[in-house]
Image (cartoon, rainbow, N blue to C red; front, side, top):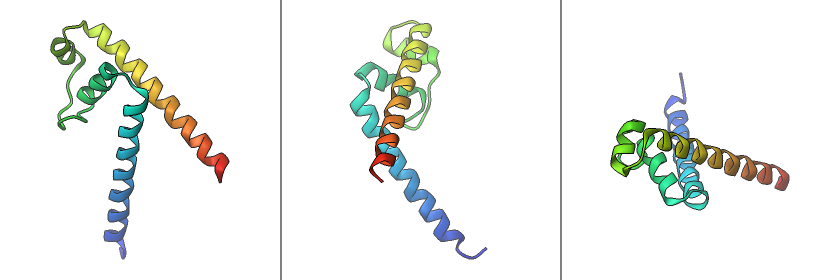
Length: 92
C-alpha cells in the first residue's frame, strides 16, 4: 500500500503524544506510591513490568495492598482523562 510509512510515522507520533499526556496526568493526579506502583506494574519506569507480588516485596507491603493501590490509581487516571476530554470537547 502506498503511504504505509507515513501512516506508521503518524501512529508513532500519536503514541508519543499519548504517552506524554499519561505521564503528565500521573504526575498531577497520583500520589508518589500510586505512581510507583503503576510504573512498576506496567513497565513505565524501565520497560519491564512486574507482578503485584514482586512490587509488594519491593515496597514492603502486601500483594492485596498493591492491588488496591493499582485500582485506585487507574480509577484516578481514568477520571483525569475523562474530565480533560470533556473540557476539550466543550472548548471546540
